[in-house]
Image (cartoon, rainbow, N blue to C red; front, side, top):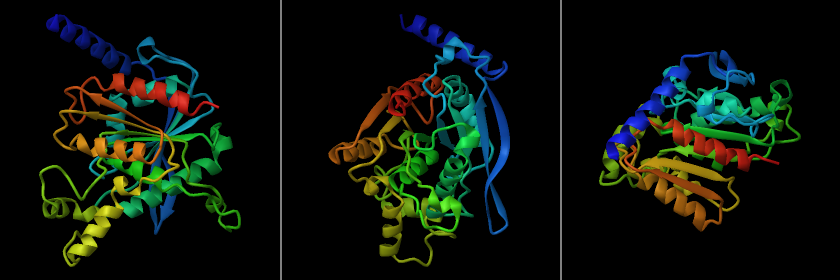
Length: 307
């Protein structure tokens, strides 16, 4: 029976792979500039659904028509184009666009050049930019979702929890737009930099310090480092009234321990927030059949963004 299950899974994954080589259910705009800061351009790819070339394996539908999703294209807090290719391999754009969603794959900057607060600021600018141009993109600015995996999942959580209303008196039209989001999807996100399994905090600070401070933790005292790590940890930003979340995490993840999602989910529930949790048995970072979980979260966000 186990052999048959493995064979069946292999056939399904082969069908995903084969379909991925056919014409896509979207038109893709590559490297659209959403922000220019100090002479540096920041890019996003835009995936606009065409309503064509939809395959049954993606479970197409109409739940996303007139809606948008921001895909945080970041892995290990690096935002090269390879992250978009990773999400293509996970069938993310095929699945969401087959539901009618317009997907904005936003690249928020790379560690070593930008810190976590700066990356969040870039994502907030992208949110405002997309909302300000919602009519052009044919989406509802009040029902904008966000998703991300690993570092992208971390930035997804942090950005969603820091959403704020726009300033109606701002002279910059973008600042009139809010950074509030309607729903969030996070795959295996780091949520607590102060406690990372068996690793001591000093080891975590040494390896990840450059996402809190440019150049790393050298020259910063212990209290300052811990304060920065806590501020960058979504777990400690949870409060009542957060948008609905769904988290997906493998129980065999060798990179981001499962407890990182477990603690975040508990904190969300304790605060009275709407949160769901999918644990993938045997799932690593990521796993080969992750398109099945992408379909599950697409089902979830269809419901959460529905009027």
